[in-house]
Amino acid sequence: MSDSEQNKAAVRSCLEEASQGNFGALDSVVSRGYILHPEGVRGPEGLAQMVQGYREAIADLRVTIEHQFTEGDYVATRSTLTGRHEGDLMGTAPTGRDVSFSMLTISRCHDGKIEEEWEIADTISLLQQVGALPEVAQA
Image (cartoon, rainbow, N blue to C red; front, top):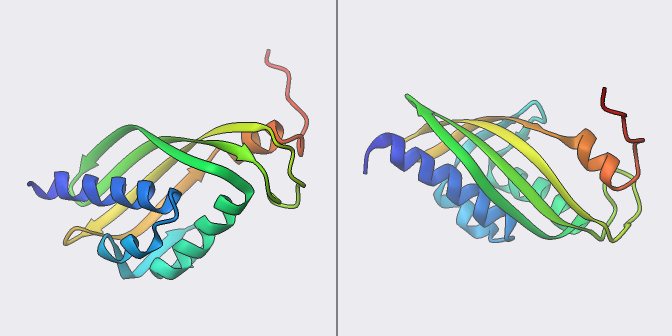
């Protein structure tokens, strides 16, 4: 397996295992020195803690990887996350609504492990879906 394919597999495994709550699997694909920007989350334990918060808010959390691209040690991944809002989400009480939102992650890998990531999630859409923000009319 090429370095690019190994890096893509590490990112895919991280997203899929974490979304399913298999946090023990993170040690094999996330480095001890891992950092998630801009949140400042550090290490596999910090990542697991952050994802667990989302898993508590969004039941049956699922990640579908739409696209992955590599450039050197970097992997860009566009994914869609889905589930049901059944727990507190950023101060919003459970609504029972099905939600779906997009996320873009750029991961820097080394020796088959994720060293750092930059993540942009469509939290505005997510918060609109649970009624925490008003819908914005499209022009």
